[in-house]
Length: 344
Image (tube, rainbow, N blue to C red; front, side):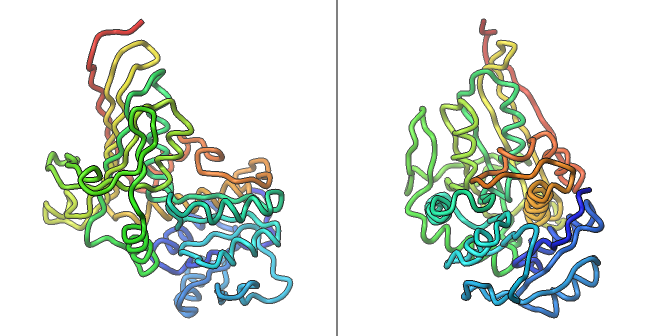
């Protein structure tokens, strides 16, 4: 591993998702130094003591210097909560430090984009406002590689109503659902914002149970549209009882990714990829953040990332990402269904 004299600053690193990211990073890279900031300095210190090679720090997002000591340096900064002032991103740009943001949604992406445009050569900016920081995006992209033409990519995701996360994650959900004017979809090659009845649908879950769902627009829609030739892309979100809790077990998080089109072989096929994590959404979101840090600091010996604006699919191979999902507890199954004649 590349030697990193400066720690990775984890803002919100003592929270529900952040703590998963911290522990995953420590498992992947035992000596990577970390600086953990959280609402509770005591909880951040306890986590730092647990994982080692880490320290607890206090961060104040209302200040341009984040309340950090003068001369502080970091190898990367990742933030697990919404920074309405963009002070953390500006701080990273002034320092020339790679910055990872997980909390923005599609309708508010202009904030980070405008800030980047005003300092494009200062630092790598990694936007991971995707479902669970990339947990549905990367399997969808891996599946799409098998197709030469894609008619539809559909992401059906379920978060158990008992699994809405800690205060930061819950605030993100309330902000996005409450503030978004509509949900972005790609329909017959045209982007459209849907709301009301157009946003409502039914989704058949991994257990075969049909549930009410609403269109939702994390960055998956724009990433998949830019990276594939799909004519239709939509993500529908169910907030309700997961299949595992229905069976009397603990809650889980569920994803069902469907790609419909023509394979490279010429066969018209519908592929359905099911993903379940038995511990809920936080481990997968934490993994997405950890893999972003790993890439941006070159922890696997990768070349340094040049200043620029990035999303996960531009820096991390989907096959590697999916393999790590499996390694860290995701259960996956795939079924391919021929749906028509062979196409030359």
